[in-house]
Amino acid sequence: MALFLAEGDVDRLLTMPLALTAVEAVHRDLSSGQACDVPRQRTRLPQTTLHILQGAVPRLDTIGYKAYTSNRTGVRFLVYLYAASSGRLRAVIEADRLGMTRTAAASGVATNWLASPDAQVAGVFGAGWQAEGHIEALAAVRSLQRVKVYARRAERLAMFCTKMSERLGLAVVPAASPEDAVRGSDIVSTVTSAASPLFDAEWLSPGTHVNGAGSNSLVRRELGEDVVKRCSPIVVDSVPTALREAGDLLPSMEKGRLHARQLIELGDVISGRQPGRSAPDQVTLFESQGMAVQDLAVAAQIEALARERGLGIELPFGG
Image (cartoon, rainbow, N blue to C red):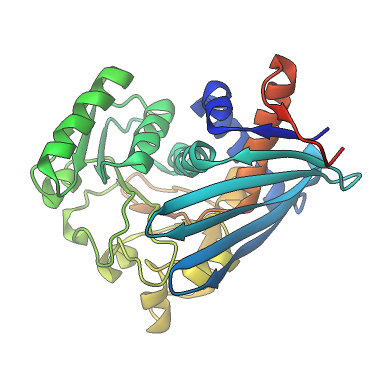
């Protein structure tokens, strides 16, 4: 029978190492043509938007989609997992934590392949749910000594830094300003819903790696054209998806200052088809939009673990 997994089940099963391994493997699949992904589709009403991401990972006998709604009351995520070989519904999974963790894992995988091996200081923009995952992912792939976090609400920022310091056992401290968060950082990650650029390119040190993870629509923009111009290579999770919704990149592309042929997919870096960092002083960029195959790869691992441990509720359909 098909299995229903609630957020509590996912929380018990999902770890960052699991997500990092699953996300890296599925990007390798994409590079070799062994997975397929359809860019996000949206149905919009004045009060609510429905978002759907779909794809398939034959290696995991998996085909499916993530659907979520967003409106003023919040966002609700579900992953539907089917057996690719039979079409049978395998699982329906509540996917708030799953989505947060796979987004962070994508930046973690990109950081592992693009950042300087001896990176020790990270600057993070955002002090919310997604930022938690990003700091955990960065700490999993680099021996960080210090994380500087910038957010506009000082009280919330202080509480966030205290919580993350205790959770990860490293110095997570408030940044006094956007410039303070960027200057001297080996890794800079933006995880916000900003509509205008967060920092200036001149604040970036040679050799910095940048993760842009919040700009997945045309109305969002975390990185300015000056930052994009400074970066090489520019790595994306998916070129087709980036061309549709990468708010950080499209302004430069509209003006002819950046071209689609300059974008490199993360899977091609992992598989060695394209170069990643080739010089110590390069400022590298990973622009993350989010992909169905990332959700499906992580969801398939969670489903397997849930069945091993007897978690979840059997649904009266889908078997």
